[in-house]
Length: 345
Image 1: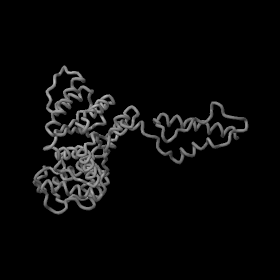
Image 2: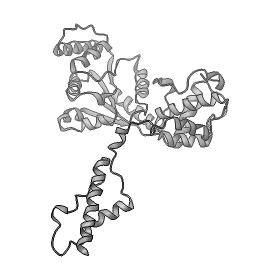
Image 3: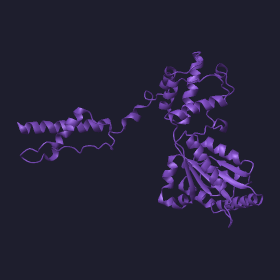
Image 4: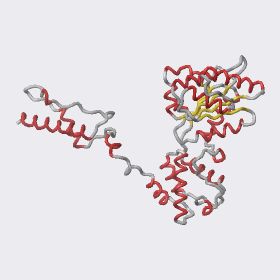
C-alpha cells in the first residue's frame, strides 16, 4: 500500500460508496437538494437517473444520513428479483418479522401496518431503491402500488428510485405510464468538467489526510479528465493505479507520462476475443470501396438491364457486416465491372 509513502491516513480512491468522500459538484449538489426538498415536501415519488460510475449510491447514502434521526429509512439494492422477493427485502429493511409462507397480499398488509405505526410515532418512512433499472415491469408495478399507502392528509411513504439510463427507457414505456406520472421530481448527474475533476481529486486526497502540494501535475489532471470522461469511478481507478505505480517508482508527483503508463494497462483492445470484433459496425468505406460502389451510377448497357448480374444492394451505415459479407459484396461488384467492361468493348 502507498498510504505511508504519500502521508495518507486512509485510501482516498476506494471502491466503496463512502459518504465522507462524496464530492458535491454543482450537478451533485443540485440533485441532492432536489431529493432533499422532495422528501421534505412529501412528494411521494422521486427519481435519480445517471450513467454508471457517477456517484449515485454515495449521494443516496449521504441523503439518508441526513434523515437518520427523524425517519425510518430502507435501502434496497437487490433488484433482480420477483415482486414477492422485493417485498421480502423491503420488509426486512424496516425490521418487520415475516413468514416465508406469506403471500404478496399479506406482505402488503404487514407493510401498511408498519407505515401506520411509524406515522403515529411521528416518523416518516423513506425507501431508496438503487439499481432500479434492473427491476422487471411487474416489480415496477409493485413499487407503484406502494405509493397508494397514504392518509387523506399525507403520503405515508417517500420513495426514491435511482438507476442508470435504462431506467428512463423503462419508464418511457406506455405500460408504465401510471408509474411515470407519479414521479414528481426527476434528478440527474452529469460528468465532471476539467475544473471539477481537479477539485474532485483534491477533495478526496484532503479527506484521506494528505497535506502536501498538489500530487497530480496539471498535465496529469487534464489527461485524467480526458481518459475518465469525467466519470468519478473511472477517476478513482486511474488515480489508485497511478499512485500505486508512483509509489513503486518512488515518485511523489504523478505526471502525465506516469499516468499514460497506467492508461496503457487499461487498454482492452489487445485482449478482446476475435468473435467480439467480427460483428463490428459497418465502417466508412475506403476510397477503393467507394469507387467500386459507385458503379451503380454507371449507365446501363444499350441491350437492357443486367438481370441476375445487377449490383447487389449497397449496405447502409446502420447495417452490420461480417468479413464474409463484405468479401461477398466486393466479389459481386468485381464480377459486375468485368461484365460491363466486356459489353462496352
